[in-house]
Image (cartoon, rainbow, N blue to C red; front, side):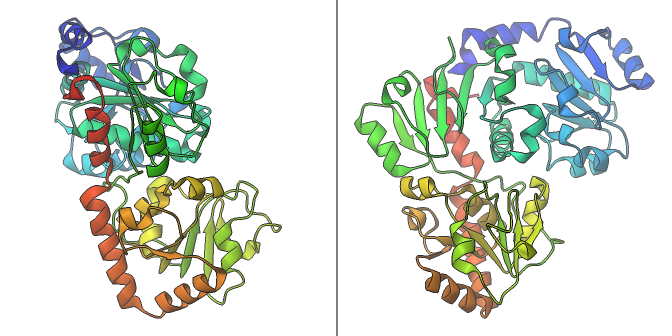
Length: 430
């Protein structure tokens, strides 16, 4: 078990040593509370064990990357914290009121602590985090500034949340900072591929989760402890070639993606970037007499009638309300995903919101979603399906309700991290 590993025992000893604490932001009461607890405040956050983040408006780019980071939520500041990207970048948060904690909870990796004495609560949270086994998640995100626009970042945050519910601590790292990462602080490493080099991290059990099609070298994959692949056919081929590989489909964070009121209503909703190429479902759908709303980057007049483009992005936290409000959520797959049988993450997210989803046909769809997501094969087929579903709200409700039940029962990140942890040495119990 990793909980009994030498590294974990070292962490148990370290938690008994005095903490070096630094602050980002100013609060005289917090400084006084630290001194009362016998804790000296470090001059540099880079040399601290724990950084208390008092100001949620400090961008993640300005936060030190290696120390533990704990947010201190001033009374009444829960809404400000919930609206900030910093909320997802702290390892834990402490609020003095349950109201602030409730506002912040959907954004934080771990459920916020509630404590009248926020300094004492933060020190207890730090003690807890230092004792937990730790997983480093390496993503293909290019740099910290671009993270909010990358689905892989939000995916990694959802993995970290689920690991937190299993007693682990997790931190994700983008490509630009890999040269400075100390993986010695981790018990294991997950390569979230994407654009990640698939080779083991020295002296750490290393697993990967391949969620997009890519070239896979069976020789290098054999050096990883385990390979999870979101394509059943690719996983089977790798296993036949002697790679320790299993099928692990994508998933959703049902703490975020759930039926959510207040979203802008659209008849047909398509949330996707163009990547400056045509998308199959818009080509098959347009022109249409129905209202189509497209949210995403790169849509130009050469690719689609731009009167259908509403915005170039949607904050990830706002997607659930948008999915919930739509009559139909549209989905398609890049050619390489469809050829490899990689189901889109959008299917899981939208279904978790109770949305009625229409997608292009792809192998394996019914194996995961049964008949709760409607697939089309031709342009005429898509127009028929759209017309029939828009005319039948009862059927839409039935499909959406059953799709959500399917996802909640078997396709959350809690289900997936159980499989990830089970593939580590000793089953990796926390």
